[in-house]
Length: 485
Image (cartoon, rainbow, N blue to C red; front, side, top):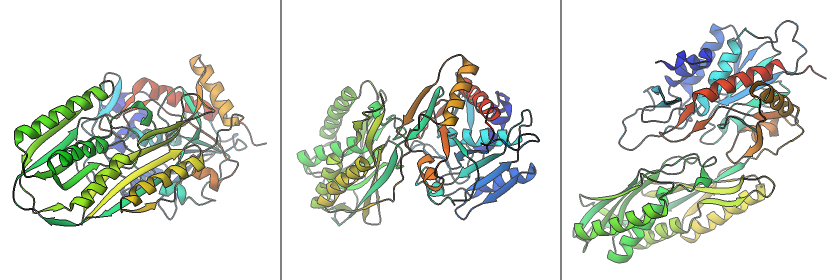
């Protein structure tokens, strides 16, 4: 069954088309061209700014010209995640969505419903003539997932709306009126190597099968971090057998909890039997520690060819010790909102290339000072180990406004449509709303969406029933936008 046969058919039709177009962060050329072609085909006004953000406008219907204008906002890029043994060319291969047990998911890759479903909803609204409404502007931003470049560089006069509805939330039945701010802390080690003696045996260690997940939405779920597990395992082999590290590769994206990690070690006096015994012990230990959250955790070891060089012992020790000391997970819970993470950090990836090892971490907080203090704490961990550390510019949070007009409209629509009250809350994930609010002070904002699970992992899936509810809510809200005061 094609997903375009689902309801609402126009939304799913556009989402199916979006899935065919490569659109990883910083590589959005094809999706930008697709959006501009869509606008021209449907005789809609379209413009593009200097960084690639797209704005497509549906003018007010006759008799609705005095309604407040609304901008619907999504991001056009997606996270590309797959398991190491999966073949997928992100520059050319389409995503292959399919239906399974009431959900739409993809074959062995991320689905891109984050935020392809928001884009599809915008396109469906722009072309749906079954209801009358005021002016609607649809803002598609670039590079949200790897740095929020589009929102950071958004021009102050790019759109004219009074109200913004962000379509990048992932929990149906919940209306979001605030989000965390964030900053990245990146450490870089200069790698000095020495020639491998040619004695002993070489082993490749792997950590696979972890859940991973969105580093904002799922940081509190207690999932294992592949970087931490591989660092702890390497440390054990170093302490017992003076094993030397020749290569490490762990994690992938700054906003994804790392699911896989790989390393190669050389040891002179370590037999396969002894190596297997240690791995077995650590496998049992990790499995017991993460019994509730990581049923597929796998720690493995196999022999490999001796490398030409290994990392010098002192640099290896500094690297591994800093990874073990670096915090990961929830740092503090909100004191003003129940069950909301206030501050967290994600030890996201370790990459070795051209005699350098780069470690990427990402901090989030709804308290700006806490975010910055945590970034400095992590900076100190890596600087004390001899690494050079830099921080990204970061992005602000979005402070909740419980008296928001669009909140009251959306809450009333939800209750009337579905017979129950929605939950109103803030989200620990970073939305672009805070950055947009900086450029457009006084903008009235809300965020809602269908239920998406496993974002930023190959298990990403979107619930079909909640997608229809999301659509019905969006249409009803747009029908009930008030006139300008």
